[in-house]
Length: 478
Ligand SMILES: Nc1nc2c(ncn2[C@@H]2O[C@H](COP(=O)(O)OP(=O)(O)OP(=O)(O)O)[C@@H](O)[C@H]2O)c(=O)[nH]1
Image 1 (cartoon, rainbow, N blue to C red):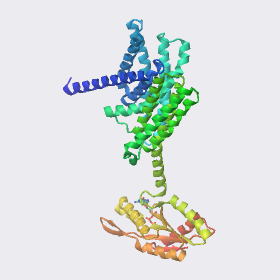
Image 2 (image 1 turned 90 degrees about the horizontal axis):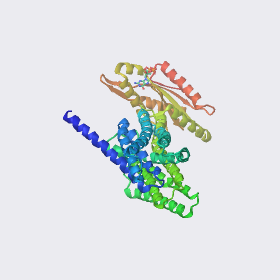
Image 3 (image 1 turned 90 degrees about the vertical axis):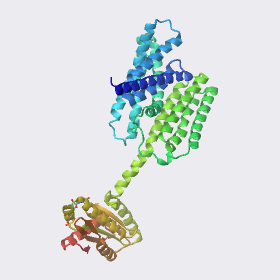
Image 4 (image 1 turned 45 degrees about the horizontal axis):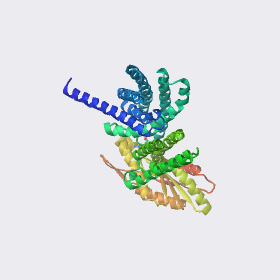
């Protein structure tokens, strides 16, 4: 082995050992929150295993198998089991395999498929994550129960009693903690998680002050404390459902803080709920709390997608209204505005004029000087017209080298004067062969009371064709 290869080998061995230690530590920390003997210990590692498979791929298999094997043996040690060591090791291996296989299948499948998706599709990715996590944790529960049946650690009655609890416990852990562990592991080992991040995150929230963030977290924790204390004292089955109200401060965090804070607050609240459970030793409403945490977390993740969806929506809306090349209105936007103006003009009995103009011999400019200069001519012509019309007028690109202008409160004579002024003000475009004047032909109509915008457009187009027929570079009204 060469020196760099040895260095790389020892770096990755260290990484695996550190990961095994982290996994065992997470599992051990769950003993502080244990509210259902042994079963509830596996909910934090469920999130860690899924996160590791998603981030590290197949490389996570061995360390997770090793870590879950270690805790399996540890559980036997705690139980003071009379089973021979070899049997303890075999049974632990079966349990470790069931956990590793289930999270491996789910995590690797998610990793393989989500990487191929368009970065814009955050809501779909969230939905996909939730579905994959539900199925993965169901598989983990079934394989785990299967392993227990196989090693005679459970009978069929116990199995049919406990698979739902196992599933919901793992589901809560995986839904709430997987994004949290993905963040932690990606920081530790420099993994790219841009696919996880909502696009166009609000910059303002980056600069938000920390104190407000701690207020929001405190509010959530106080709410959790109040609900669990009330649940403990009154023991009414409805009280546990009040935990769902934490979704209000959680949504406050989602909409005002960064993604990291959302993920962190969910992890913190789920751990605090589990700690309170451990503290009071109550477990009759554990399922309610776990379901509630899944719902709150799913809500929060979808909430994360809302700002990027709004931005995307705004961008698309802008694209439908503003022509990308010339930055004047699009035809669709023009028609929309013109319809509204027409209504207004009719009720107030003011005139409304419409101009259609088309650049002359524009194809020649493209053919002689290239399309980039052609584009420049379109931009300059549009901008020149824009600076020579009133604020209440509207210019739009109809398509190609044809433009529309709406002139509220102008009759045919006034619009003709405006068009003549615009025709004379068209600029010349600089080219390597010198300045090339931009010329255009204009067709003008005054929209009649009985006319629709489309009918007026057709008349203006006829006037424009007439201007072209008459030799171009002129104004024809109809
Ligand atoms: N550079 C550039 N050219 C465009 C664009 N859209 C359309 N064109 C070109 O614009 C030209 C339009 O030509 P026409 O209006 O049919 O004819 P013309 O050469 O202007 O002649 P007349 O209109 O009869 O004076 C075509 O050659 C199109 O390829 C664009 O966005 N950029």
